[in-house]
Image 1 (tube, rainbow, N blue to C red):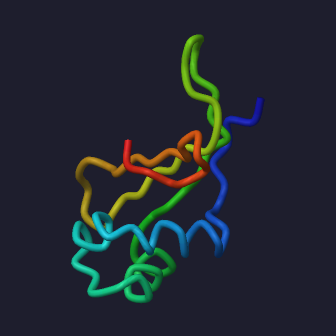
Image 2: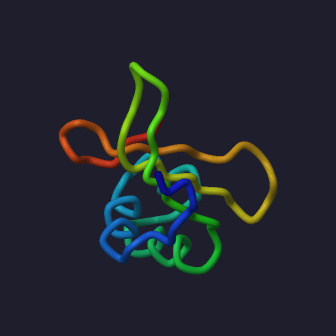
Length: 85
């Protein structure tokens, strides 16, 4: 089991940047602006996650802004889309 965080791929950044709820949370006007934030301001990592049984197995993302507070958690759902947790 690999429990070390990894950087988001460019495709994952595009997917997350396209989520309107996340754009609103960060005050981004559009997906391109959110992608810029994800590349330069937001701390973003991905884990290959396995929870206890029964549980979740798959991509688990954590986004943290440049001010400490509660981090935003996302997972890849069974349809393959990244969604808020």
